[in-house]
Length: 597
Image 1: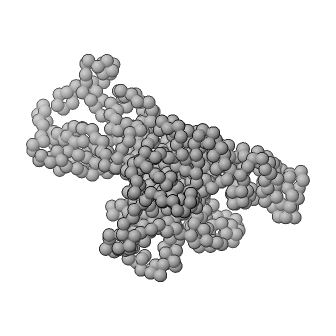
Image 2 (image 1 turned 60 degrees about the horizontal axis):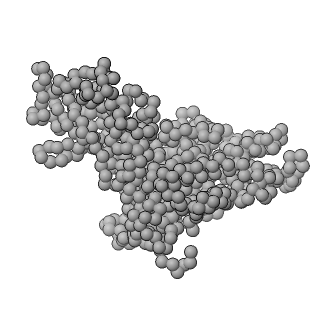
Image 3 (image 1 turned 120 degrees about the vertical axis):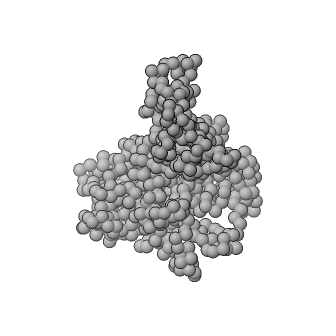
């Protein structure tokens, strides 16, 4: 695109209206690499996203660092990030017997997401270490590195940190669909890492955004869109990361400034760059069988460092021969195909290592098109793995055969998510999202003798305190799967609670998710395996225990509490509250949400 084209005003940032300096930090912890962006909000100035491009012990400035840590035998962090991959640390770690921890992000995955896709195995964490604790240690490291960077790259860096202490807003990105329990764990990790305090205000300083949405915002900010962008334009974001592939489709609803909405539920698959490395390791184990190159530590270094940083990034065509450095220049072994320390690899062998991620990406992208009812939905490829020439070329070849264009943003795509975190905090772009499942609760319903399904369960009928015949265990949907929800949309259902006078006036409900086919009637006790317990929701109705709400039945006194269970899905976090009528006015009350492993 030529530089003289006029692009739509994707973002229209206004001068910061606050009276004091504020700081927003966006953190993208990836399976293999991580990055940080930030924005200093100064009164009267237009904020902008900036990237941390220097970390301790980096040999050259870079915006991303390995998601790796070392713990000693007392479980103290000895090295993290860029420091963890220095030669001195690797030698010391081997000599001292330290624990190397990597891919720890995947331990925070939702319980209903399978991890053993394509035979991937993730090592268990060292004894007594938890996923929350490890993530917290790494977040703490990134936070301190960010503060160090701000101090050294801003003339008033120390003042910025002093003025914003204990008020910093953090935006943490996570794979599509990792809402609920993973978000709770990330918030706990932020407390562990010293980013926030364990208080209501401290927890409110953490915000979440999906990697798909953050990537879309970064792409729009870099003008990866048609110059004549109009409402109705649709596109798909393919965020190819280290562990996951996140696919999200959007529709532009307004331009200058841009507003957009999800048009189908997003997808997340364990099909990232890590799977290429896994297959490369298997290939080397076959080609180098019986040689010293298969020493576990040497093989790991060849795959996760040499291959990752050279051959994998350069590989573009299956028809060309590739070379992988496996030893010193004095090492030659014709039988193994090694010449001057380099191993000869046929391009088709290397291409086979990419088969699984490419297949998963194409399947997900095509499913998005089908769900959107659109034959030609342009795809924007981002993420660290998205910079792979071979991945890009193969996706482009396959998608163009479908009549679909594939583009990459004119930015360093591996830092797109961290920048997108900042745009999410500064701008209000995504106004509509799509539910990934049906949300509902288990409740009792009035028995209907005219309903055959009720008659089938007649043996379960009981009389409630009001004398009504009731059937237990009905699954009552509150919002259906694939429902398009705006940020202001609320979904609610009425419930009646009978509380014996003098007892605790609280309601504890389990919120369930159902991802199966729609059913007119569904009984929870008959579909336990299909219902995924999302969280436990608690309401306190003590303030509604008033004389006018008393019901006397068979000499017993009950508080009758009628309320609505209301859910708001428009944000990136689930928000639940109680709603009721009192003194002729609509009232709202907070809910306590608890997620369990």
